[in-house]
Image 1 (tube, rainbow, N blue to C red):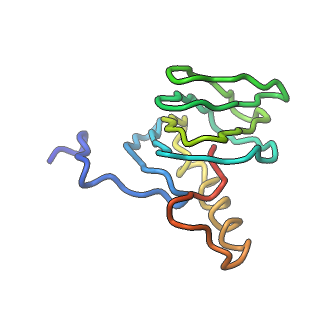
Image 2 (cartoon, one colour):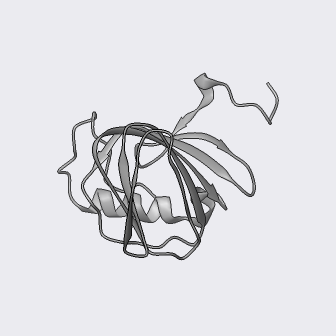
Length: 132
């Protein structure tokens, strides 16, 4: 298999419940399937986030401005911009980050935070509330 093609059986589960679809040197692509979350505290990331609601509905809050997205809607969050999400009903969101979130290291920081919340693990059907 080429280094440039990733087949389904080789897709890795990310540390936060996402699937790491592909990662280049400048861009990472991941998907959050059947994801739900209450509104999370605003955060910033050192990378740009481009997202697409491929199934379901969500609210993305960028610089304290909420925007409702329905299936087929997309969003862009510039680097170092305050943002949050609210996804009350299961949705599937495709997200690209530039540079890749793994390279920026925030996935690891978030994973430590989720783990530190204690062994009060959530059921496997629900991912940790740390998207983006």
